[in-house]
Image (cartoon, rainbow, N blue to C red; front, side, top):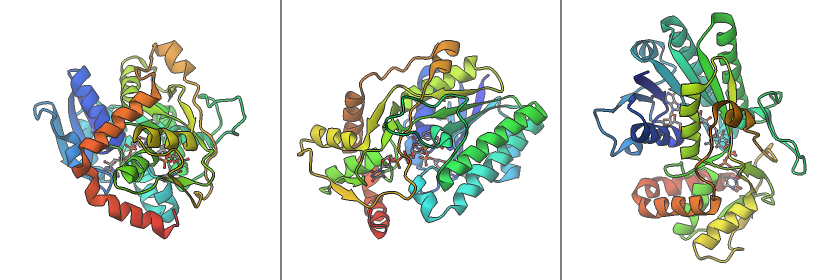
Length: 332
Ligand code: NAD
Ligand code: TDX
């Protein structure tokens, strides 16, 4: 494998993957990204032009994707509408990109017999009770809750159907919540960090007892590379790093690291249909592929992430007010 096509590579996780690939492999990368509100050219700054090329375009554009897929050895498909709260306000773009966009990629990969790795989420499995000892595994039934997670579930099922019906050479990974640099400030952790840096109070949905299973974006990238290199075609792998935390504890940690009182946050209106808990059992990835996460300490990972937002306020400040205005309209 020499040339890979990374969809959504100007977004949060996709851009971290591209940086990771440039540092850790010899692969040549083409990014295809529509540069929606969530995509940012600056996320690819500093990468060598000899290794990384950006094509601005829509994954639902069949002619463009046919052209691009034909000249690559593999497609790593990150592009998506990714924010649950947006999917509650306006689900339509989620169908267009997550369902139709994935369908277009599948058809291009089928036509040109190109390997696909489809990036998905643990949210396809719905949620767990707080006191349930169970965690999600590859055989947990799909039970998505939101328009976002149902379109991701739909895209996974399309990939499975193309594998079974057409022999597509594909793998799928379902990862837990990522944190790290370049995450859009609409998302929980960067919203709270930039709130404090901007003199605002963090905003916790409901009581804040919902649990997310956090993983650093670089650990997600190393897992995807491990699957590309050693994963079995047709298989699904869950990616997680045993990082369960409730939202209240995460907000308190951010406040502590920013030298603020731990109770200096507001409770706001809860998310409709808010999933209670996600938790990943990554035994298959660990035992069959030998993958291990590198980031063991959540608190120092968050401290590094805070440093990134502090040092890159030009990146987020221009759209902070707009993001907060949108939330305020929902009393969030
Ligand atoms: P993001 O919103 O930060 O980035 C998405 C990128 O896709 C943006 O650059 C955007 O411009 C691009 N894009 C959107 N629609 C497009 C289209 N029609 N054509 C081309 N490009 C388009 O999202 P993210 O958080 O980086 O998530 C990336 C992927 O990882 C998604 O598939 C998401 O479901 C999955 N995922 C995310 C998490 C998480 O914690 N954020 C966890 C597990 C899985
Ligand atoms: O201001 C906030 N306050 C708050 O309490 C925001 C924005 C969120 N929350 C809560 C909701 C969730 O319980 O924090 C938790 C995390 O919220 P998000 O960052 O919106 O992530 P989540 O909904 O868990 O989904 C994320 O992980 C799985 C990604 O956005 C998805 O793309 C991925 O599939």
